[in-house]
Length: 346
Image (cartoon, rainbow, N blue to C red; front, side):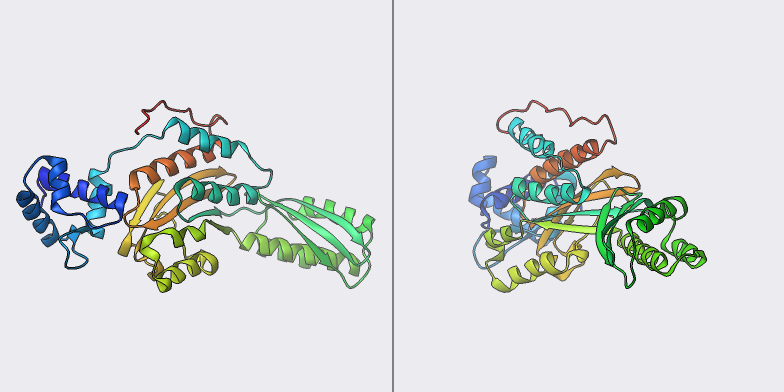
């Protein structure tokens, strides 16, 4: 059933007042806003409830939006919100603190977003294939060395590896040259096959085998997840119930791999309440924005909040932040998006 314009306006006002106050909204508040009688609004709200757009949480006269109501709001009723000058400057300032390693940039990204929207946030980076771009083996002592691996997708990893036989600095220099000549841009399986073809002294072969095994583990772990602002969950009235809060906090601390990501390459996506597959997210909404990192990689920034979250504000901030990260990683001009002049009340 197609809603009338008045019903849509009432639904929009109910959602926005509930977002602001986190309390059920009564007909009188809407009547004052629209300049019509409370009886008229009460009847319209009753019909919206029958159609599944509003819910009555208890015996009070107030109503709250349902997931169906939020979905209509996000799809049709929500006004596009521009960031204020202060907000854009805050995001740009944080992004100017660019760090050298990709891991640090992504971890920082989640922290910045969480501090801006005041909800828990997470960052995901996923590679799309590729192999090792460069190896470097650094001597520590005769029984150990540090393997440094740079992948095609821009990750730089290092680990202390041990051998049961002596390996000299000259051995490691020769192995570094061999690795960069014969083992770059291969899959773990291809590297393993070439390892079996290598004819080397026992110490060099063991060091080579350890390095290839470590590189294979890095290539297999192509998805990294970073979470931030988990404690913000405890500040939300929806999660005063300790069991609900614990379930959601456990997802952020122990089940990061289960956090949602956009489907079909969507740049921006919103999941509302039951649209989330994970049971811990059934009473929340998730707003996600993806961005290009380059070098076969794509990143995601996600925000988890109550279903009454300010979707317009969160979406605007995430969209700008994702665009800024894309520029930061050099996919466009290398400059941050321009600051748009907006009115103070926007």
